[in-house]
Amino acid sequence: MASTLADRLSQLVKTMRGQARITEDNVKDMLREVRMALLEADVALPVVRDFIERVKNKALGAEVAGSLNPGQALVGIVHKELAATMGEGVSDLDLATQPPAIILMAGLQGAGKTTTTAKLAKHLIERRKKKVLTVSADVYRPAAIEQLKTVTRQAGAEWFASTPDQKPHDIALAALDYARKHYFDVLLVDTAGRLAIDEALMAEIRDLHATLKPVETLFVVDAMQGQDAINTAKAFKEALPLTGIVLTKLDGDSRGGAALSVRQITGAPIKFAGVSEKIDGLEVFDAERHAGRVLGMGDIVALVEEVQKGVDIQAAQKLATKLKSGDNFDLNDFLSQITQMKKMGGLSSLMDKLPAQMTAKAGQPDMDRAEREVRRMEGIINSMTPLERRKPELLKASRKRRIAAGSGVHVQEVNRLLNQFEQMQGMMKKMKGGGLMKMMKRMGG
Ligand code: GDP
Image (cartoon, rainbow, N blue to C red; front, side, top):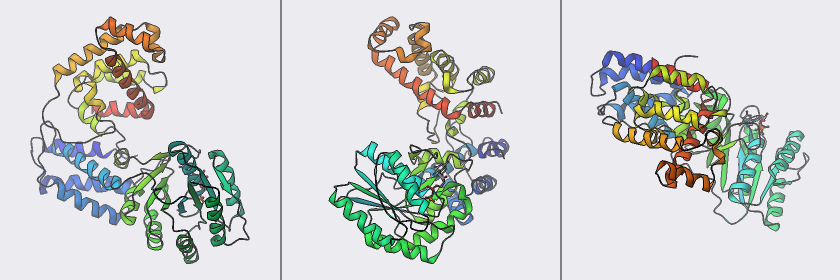
């Protein structure tokens, strides 16, 4: 695995310290690195070219604020632009129509349509309290109809029976009729995919679209498809007025560059990400976080930047070794963590950066405030019993009142600390040890 963009940019940046502006001269090499990083993440070439051009225009002449150097500032600009491009126009599913709201699923075979149909059913039932019906118009693979039946049951939705001897068009109409008569809020229509684009398939799905007039037409695409995603996306965009994208298999190794390509080619927002084979493996797409992944930097762009301002590297590394996984991260660990982090501008400012919000920022962190905040947090944690520190879930109202009184703060302060602790715990889990180790190494380099 190649080193990350941040690593490579900081190599380049070593030669240009003290420059206060991003100029035609110093930006060229850096943009070459950005271009490589995007290509490595499998963003399609024409999309990369376009993107680099936009970033260049934004970057040229941009002031490099305060403690940042031009390389860091450029990472910031790239990250921001990437997140903005991928996140533009993102919204939840549009169900504002006379029920049933029809959602048509489109994509190649194996992209994850059937799985995603059931995941969406579950999402709509649980998050939006909808009554959901699914139907399969895939008459070419009998197994596909059975598969939808199984996963629909897991989702807790209702499945409308169809058979391989029916026409997709007739199946769609029958399901719609049933959905109307039984007052379903949403009808999810799974369709046939092929291994590659073919005209008959496109004609069929166009016909289904014309018949059903869906409020959402979702293009399901496999994030592992990489460069090929661009051709698939083009074909589906030409055939159908897509309203959204679902990017599946983001739990795989891919850096997910397909997101940028597909977003750019179709113009449709990426609404969801598939993150496991399981029925609950669906997330609302998070463009900020995904931008970090495409650049090979995870959520930690901003964190790294803060860290470069100075921290006790050895102590941090020791801590990193200890915190191999987030599973048993408790308030004792949290306490050593915040003690380490006070040099980085206080925990609250650090937390503000997760997910990374890269903005060129002037000035040094307010050390006094950070010191005070850490002292107060230490005070609160020191007022807890050893058992409470190991098992924060014990902290119900009466214990919190005791701790607040003991450390001379309001109960809200105790709650705030526990919130921050939970965020940190979540972050530790997400980084799964390896990530944290890498982060700490980068701090040292
Ligand atoms: P379809 O042909 O488009 O309907 O695709 P399927 O829904 O049958 O999915 C194809 C394969 O991809 C199945 O083995 C799914 O379990 C798997 N799959 C779908 N979505 C995801 C995902 O988000 N993550 C992972 N790891 N596997 C997925």
